[in-house]
Length: 319
Length: 319
Image (cartoon, rainbow over all chains, first blue to last red; front, side, top):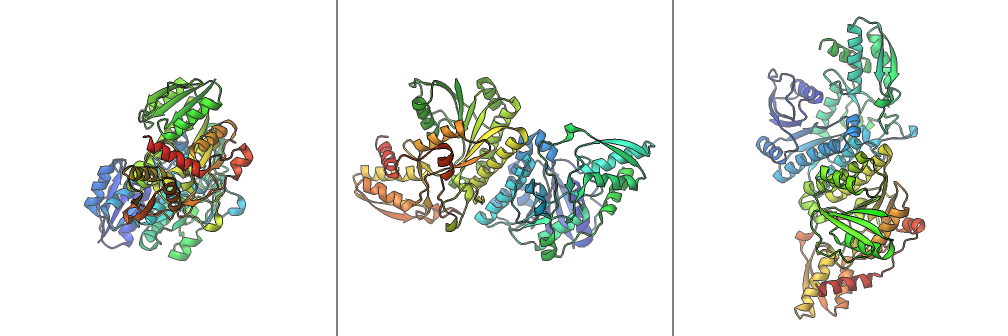
């Protein structure tokens, strides 16, 4: 029976991944780890047997103990301090948490010498500021991280390379672009914008104003349900040591995202940019190429952006 | 008056840097930091006023306090777990110590908003395995770190980039190739080989055998006294945000180093390679180009390798 260890289990990607397993995998076991208890129930699944453990991945010994006990054949490492904005405010905390928890995890697997495949989740932020000519970004594009968060993610990739080359470990890597979907925390931009719009609407207004950061930046959004299918496929069939972009291949300015959602809610919105919300050095345009993952694994993104945004709005309307 | 904060003060580079200041700078102050007390005296200098503090750079608050008190205009960050071999044995400890102490240091300087220039010491190990066609390595060569130590050093470079670009800090960077010279710890290869040879000689033998790691690897050695002059020049005149190789531009296999030293001692040596001393993934040949630092700062290496090796042997003979 397949055994999946999922770090960052309580986040929205972990939750969607379990939904995917329930529908598409045979009977399997999941051990969820997170520093926070999940705020959702997980005792209703039929195919997925889930146990959860509250754990700080900085506790090296505990991580080792859990892996030794569970003996996973797959490790999906979702845990991270994934906010770029936070990394500018608390660069040391962000960097150390991201790299140190990853190191504890892979080093435990190394020391225990267990036969497991690890999926290391990286970020499009690793590409940094790029020229328009380089878009869409392919995996062999030079990395040029410009935030503490992005450097941590790049370090994670290179550390993976060291553990693969030096210790023979089985690690597959992603550079995941922005993902959106229901149940995402409002720490993240689209979820935050949707929540604000729904609150405005609920207060009875058809016209309102929003305070935002820079909404001219262009990002490449993929629905989380497509993202978790990519992660599943990569765990099963990704090539060891390879990095795969997980993205839609299309870019949209945040401004347009707001417009689409406002239209779905029949609202009009005035945007006020607050300079304090603009980050010290931000990437202007990020669009990825998903050619590699499509070609090698037959993955494609199936949920149109409009549908994702509608589902995000529905989520906030009922929560 | 110039005030230099030197981390890793108790190591042999710190000691030589202070010697350089004594001879070449005007009256200046040095605050030395290290986790270990120096095993040398530093109360005999006339131009350099030195105070020392035993401190673990992982103690963020203490680092901040020291910088606030001392208000350095130069920070020479020599502290590191610089053994590649150790990084393979204890990858987590090596990586975390190297990156976390650097982060604590530059983040303290950022938060205190002091006007200081930092010299970040990197390593030729960042280049990783390269093709012969790429030699000698220039600063714009792709980084391809293959050891935990090397990834830490690369992360340090990119973190510097983030602090320069995002917070406007004044950091100059090196990629320092192997350095040798008297007073170096026998943890490092040439010093270790010299010590072994001197011990053999002292035991009255003119012919002996040595157990070593892979002695076919080629490295680029610079005398530490030339290295510290490079660091001084970089602190004074290096261009902010720039990386400079510090190297001789010439490569020699370790085998030849042993032969030169054996000849200087009038000895014959049989080398036995112990496979256990060979690292999981090692760079075959590393030779750097020092064209940039020569062109921009007028630096050159002045001490021939034979002289350095003779001085290393003399050091072990009298210690």
